[in-house]
Length: 407
Length: 118
Image (cartoon, rainbow over all chains, first blue to last red):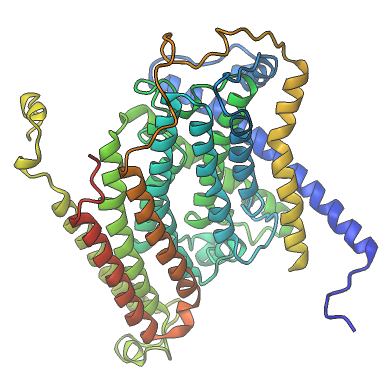
């Protein structure tokens, strides 16, 4: 007598084969996407700075990442004599491995690699390992700049992880599921425009998540761990050749993953007008197109911010996470709870039904009341937090007064 | 369900292989001519002074402690968020109280100066 589900051997082989094909496709797609992103960022930032960027290798410089891959592959690799060899070697492996693992559940349009029921939790559990890799790189290099960068990086990652996780709670409240598949399909109503970003709570969640994602992906203005004008290259100081390239790859893979996650959770993933009408194959292709447009638009926003905003100071960075983002995100969780209660609850709260009528998707009174209430709560929260954080004249240092920054 | 986790397992193996593969290929094809100066620790061209693995500023650990507290609170909030749609008014009020306690903790840490970067 057995309680285990018995699957025939050939079914197992089929499963493994399908999995291997899927894994290969995702890894190749992810690498190509990352290569494209490096090119895209350098070209975009060049035009923002009135330059041309890489445009010699291949059409429009598209083969630049390939030439760089060859260059780093054939470059001599140096491990300092004082470094902890094992930790120094394992740090890039841990970092890239953690990032790649997140792609096991991240959807591509309406194509899902796996329908893991706890997808959101999985992503954050796995990408949390990223921080360990950073600490390993900082500590294992046995270099002062590397250690400083590593410690700064860990402090930053750890601080922004909280707003990042909490900013997702509204989405889980709205969808009632931790599975990315469910979250994306539930945004398909209203002719493919039922995206979560189109509500006051969803918008607040999106903005806070985006800011925290900039910090998690070490993008300017949050690139404190590798601030090249302050601490050489931070935790990357002692890395060169292929190991450095692996770090670089991991960084861009993280950004790609974050863009994909934001596009899926807030901007409806592959949902858009016409996706459901066109059927499985054509609709699937169209969903991929929509998805990449959304993800690339988000990445462009990241590049635009890099081209515009100067780097923060460490104390400002930490203060921003704990004293600004966290209170707003906490209030937003509560106001999402109110939003769900007002728009959806029938038998759970008879009092709302008595006031606004039965809950339905065309009950505009309920949606109107919910929008007004949550908007007021969120705006009040932002106002209160800004007031609390306003600097008193007594907080200013003498240097700042001398520089005329008192305003 | 089982097949999902089988896929995740295969993906884990692939994710570990993925960074190792270019490192191994590079180890085969790259030149290797170490010298003492090349392998010294970088410190702006000077010889490294003093010990590097030292005790570190306590502020980093305060952030880590605050992180642990809030991370665990977040883990409690996730199941609530999943089940919230079916729970009713009780869940709303209870979570309001829970978030209030969380906020009190944040205010305490704030007032104690644990969030200041000195």
